[in-house]
Image (cartoon, rainbow, N blue to C red; front, side):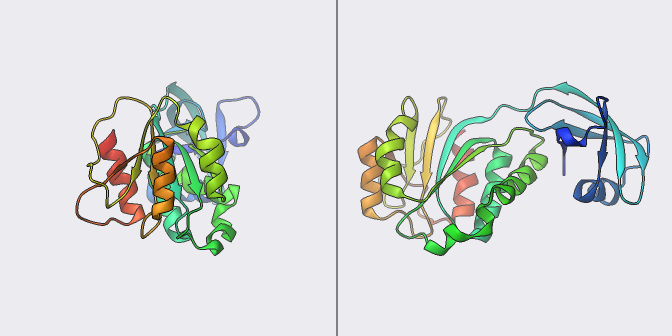
Length: 236
């Protein structure tokens, strides 16, 4: 945890003091081993980053005086369209995408996505936010990516996707593509990554019809959780 993420409800009345319990208090005391007087990096959700000085410690809570001095790092101008992975993989991908600064994540249905994945408790708003927050804490960021769930492929591609990619450089990862993935893109992007096994031909054709360019990342077939950071880091 490289940043202690704070929420409005952590503040004690209208002061610059916060009281933390649970996971964050445990991490500060047991991992950082912070004592009274020590300072740690803090940030307020959707707001600025600064420092918090430990003022009191208790077996069940901890108080800090906080000050905020700078803006969080800018988000990548990237919308990531991701065929819904299996729940355990999704958790790791969300953390990774959040750490990398992805601006928007769209979880999409695909022919090779198991229907049961859409019933997973990982897709609850609370669980999604939990994974994204872990990514923010790792990267010293405070702004959550937007996450959208789209369980119907065809309506999304026909009704939403054309407007979504307007003015953006749009790519779909496809191991059989002839063009390699480009580097260092200097404009807003939309990147679509399929499930394990890739998008089927019908789905690739739909992306191409919308204006996406299929690209490959070399001779190796990557897992979803490897492909996301590899492609994002190459593109930006």
